[in-house]
Amino acid sequence: MKNNPNDLFGVYVHWPFCASKCPYCSFNSHVHRGAFDEDAYVAAYEREIAHAAQLAPNRVVQSIFFGGGTPSLMSPSSAGRIINAIVKHWTVEPRAEITLEANPTSVEVDRFRGFRSAGVNRVSLGVQSLRAGPLAELGRRHSVEEAVAAVRIAQSVFECSSFDLIYARPRQTLKDWEDELKEALRMAQGHISLYQLTIEQGTRYFDLQVAGKLKIPDEDLAADFYEITQELTAAAGLPAYEISNHARPGQESEHNMLYWRYGEYAGIGPGAHGRLMINNQRHATADEKIPFDWQKNVMARGHGMVVDDVLTWEEQGDEFLVMGLRLKEGISLARFTALSGRQINPAQIAALKGYGFVETLPNGNLRVTDRGLPVLDAVVADLAA
Ligand SMILES: C[S@@+](CC[C@H](N)C(=O)[O-])C[C@H]1O[C@@H](n2cnc3c(N)ncnc32)[C@H](O)[C@@H]1O
Ligand code: SF4
Image 1: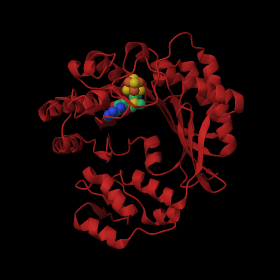
Image 2: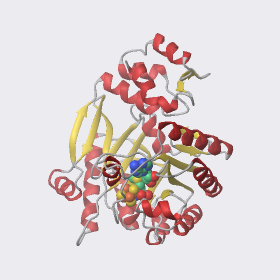
Image 3: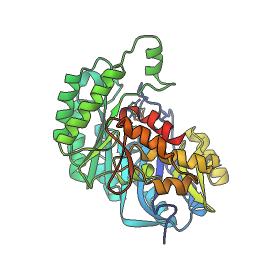
Image 4: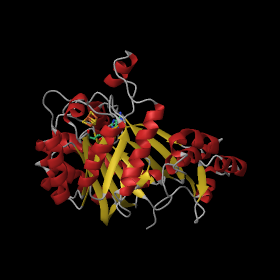
């Protein structure tokens, strides 16, 4: 059985609940108060998976990603029920990557073995910082010691694991980050995600910044943070394979690669996005974001989708560029033409090459150079024009 359109198919499962809301976070995450019937809630995931499999039948699932919110707050048996529903409706490759995002508090770490038995084989831990002060400022509910212990336990329980750090934080100096990152790289095994702090509208950090009470590194300093991050990770044998993601070669996250290679994926759960090929057209789907409204919708009509748009050729081409040019492997120009029905203007490519922002790889792929990555948005806009 062949999957559409480039043989990549994955399932993203969004778990929207968190123990508290971090001040920098704009993800679809909610703190629920009062009683919560988790078994009934998981039944909505089972229903929505059945519906997605009707829209996109006979696919071979290569990766499943439980993201959040905080999916490590669900019980391992809930994760098991969701995985079983996916297995029931699609073929899941025996070696499929099944990732769960986890927060490093002791409650969740105690559940790791249960998640492993349920079928999860990769954990991505939100460590965020290895320093006590910044952890508290970021509103995290775990200590540095708990985070370090969680990384060690994840490494012993799961075949693969990764952890996230946020850099270019308020008042952080380059030297602070260099020391912290070196420590992190000594702990990391195959994979680490390093995100530059972004201030997103609708967050407490955004309000603080508007009020002049939160200062983060300016553009020049942020570029220095980025550069030192590339140097230290490459020297430690975990080079970037995408702007924020670093791995030993061969240990890249398959699910993330599927997004950036513009594969096909079903989005299940509140606020989840999907990209499904239906009747040879690429559909962009998005679910209701409010957790209990989503559940009501799914139980009433079988799915929680509130957006289902057919992407035009132009939109597909733009999405392909935005996703693929983040990758070190770059993009195939032939695939761009197949998706968008047009060619990238050779004069535009030549001009960007002249600035040293893009290069052609021996296999013919076009990629953004290290010099071009800090101005990626502008490069994409030029190529898409
Ligand atoms: C869905 S979130 C978090 C998953 C999990 N609940 C946690 O907090 O660890 C995935 C990752 O995005 C990153 N992230 C979230 N908001 C960010 C922001 N404003 N700037 C940079 N990174 C951010 C964090 O590193 C986080 O671990
Ligand atoms: S960073 Fe993680 S724990 Fe914090 S609010 Fe966002 S999703 Fe929840």
